[in-house]
Image (tube, rainbow, N blue to C red; front, top):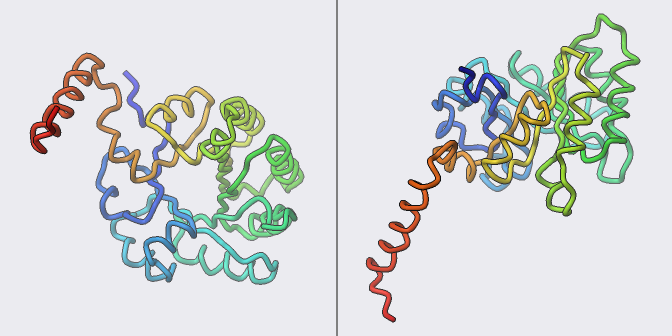
Length: 239
């Protein structure tokens, strides 16, 4: 019988690595500059070294924020040198809308593992696919393609067709993994599996609710009612 981790890799998404690294279903880690700033983690090298024993050889993605090409290349190589398990997380486009795909291509040709992030549209997926298709067949540097399903759903658009399109588009590229980013609820894991994703990122709030996965609904109903009653009685709510 297949387990959940046979179907999809679960990556913890955040900065509390020591809290979640010991869970048996966590097979990798990602973070971003917002998480790092919120946690006052202002030094990538120090962050990596402090958590290297927790991470072990599991994948870790750390994000670039520079938008000047020479600086991006320099920063990416520096991050990549932290360890062979480190992916450089690069947005598919700059904040002004200009593409980062040429920089990504250069890094892949240099053997830098890349997590292409902030992908929202089929057009962006096609642009990345064209770039990878144009490269020498011998260049098989690992690539993660992160589709921001959670934020897509915030716009009222169902992300599943876009993610499914991406999974089918890249299915013959064995060095490419598709990632469902922005998990909003435990159910998103099932949606990601159904779409064909290799990876889903799980933030703190969802990690803390993973014990609800596959829970018996009748029992869950009973526990919920009991928790409501306990809260009322503990605070002596009057009617």
